Length: 171
Image 1: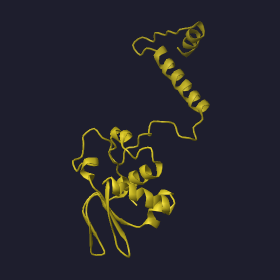
Image 2 (image 1 turned 30 degrees about the vertical axis):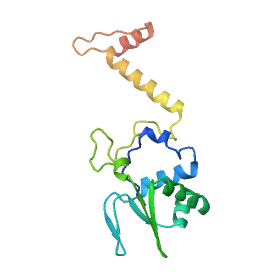
Image 3 (image 1 turned 120 degrees about the vertical axis):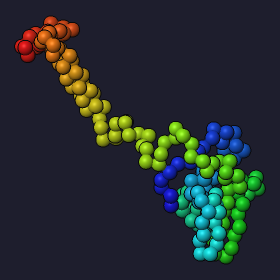
Image 4 (image 1 turned 60 degrees about the vertical axis):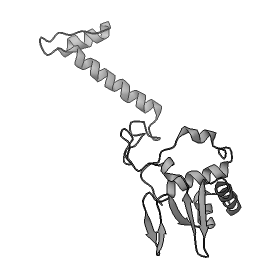
């Protein structure tokens, strides 16, 4: 399954007729995330961009929906022309009808690359708030100590008497 890259998701999805049907929405979003992004072939079968080869059982396992929920969701999406479905004895080819409306082929500037992490600058789950606070406090002290000594003449300043006294002892 694809695990890198991104998809565009427009807010108009909030007004989509199946948005309140959780299994149908979940399946449709899953299909958007897992269909081919370029034309391909599988066992001699042409699988165009915006399509994928799958089965009800596979979709059930991937989405954690029951097979009946998947069948119902596929029926909803087919009925409203969101997808087309071509079934054989061995597989089902599912195509998102207006895939080009959902995902353009042109890369858009100012969008994050697949390798960008949106949470890179945030503390990890292992960082405790108090540990982060201590680190920031120590960094702040180090910055203030550097500010206290001026390289041009050794002039020292501080906001409180203790800071001024510490500065005097440094010089």
